[in-house]
Amino acid sequence: MSTGNIYFDHAATTPVKREVLEAMLPYFEEKYGNPSSVYSIGRASKKAIEEARESVAGIIGAEPREIYFTGSGTEADNWAIKGAAYANMKKGKHIITTSIEHHAVLHTCQYLESDGFEVTYLPVDEYGLVSPEQLEAAIRPDTILISVMYANNEIGTIQPIAEIGRIAKEKGIVFHTDAVQAMGNIRIDVSKLNVDMLSMSSHKFYGPKGVGALYVRKGTKLTSFIHGGAQERGRRASTENVPAIVGLAKALELADKNMDHHNEKLIALRDRTIREIEKNIPFVRLNGHREMRLPGNVNFSFDFIEGESLLLMLDLKGIAASSGSACTSGSLDPSHVLLAIGLSHETAHGSLRITFGDGNTDEEVDYLMEVLPEIVQRLREMSPLYEEVSRK
Ligand SMILES: *Cc1c(COP(=O)(O)O)cnc(C)c1O
Image (tube, rainbow, N blue to C red):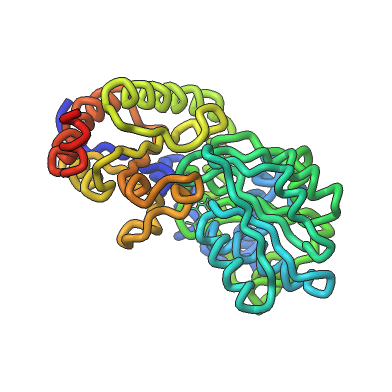
């Protein structure tokens, strides 16, 4: 196979599907009306948004009025956490989350700490799993919110969300989950999970960027996020991004319809890649859980090398991958997720994340396995530490 453009970074973002784009296009040109207007072209936009809301709600077992469209996954996380914190602060100021959340959650919690809230960051085990027992033990009389991500964007570990939801419900504490990575990969029914709030982001499931949604169970106390007009039941003002909302709903419908096939394919690519890396490259460690893992996620640490150099060498061969989370690349801090599962700074620096998606093929994995062992070997030959080890 030639050195084409191979995209193995679907946890960072995904291409917009043709059908999604086609569903969006009319809302840029002919159907451009403001959904708040009373004339028919405005009402057509309003109708498109309400149909999108019904569709998203139906897919996750919610009611349409429990779905709020947002400007991104990050915004949904910010709103859920700040909104619940400020709405419940008379009851208490303690929040429980985990040490492996996306920065959209972690930095929001850190902001709240600067405003007088107390946050417990639960540790995870070597696979990246949160312990429901530890979570239960961390609950205090003043705990007002629990936020635990559904699946991790770096190592793919899927958390025991139903169990955590049961505990939160028993204790009467609001439970939010950042399901941005889970959406489109895992069937989610909020009524069965006892989740009170759930964040999603369209560009992680083949929809457009810059649009997300927050599910808010009715009765959940939440302050408004953007003040202004009456859009989104007055809680998230500003003229709706109609094409993006239509695109989000279309992308989720397609993901829901194709999920079994999609997962089967991704799991095959994932498991083959894990198997072949473990077989063909020495001194590696698979990060994340082997079974409780997103279908398209492969994350390895390679001793004696720098993840950034590995990425550059792969890029020269036409392969796009990641060395952790996109947000941390460019900085020299190793990934907080890899440190949380117990990796040393050195090992964390030598990690590679490959995330498969709809367009990937077996031939692309053939090509990866043709070039990766060679690249790893070449980089290791530059390491004095590796020289010592390999001489033994
Ligand atoms: C991508 C991602 C986000 C942020 O979503 P945006 O729409 O890009 O703001 C939040 N949480 C997780 C787990 C993610 O993977």
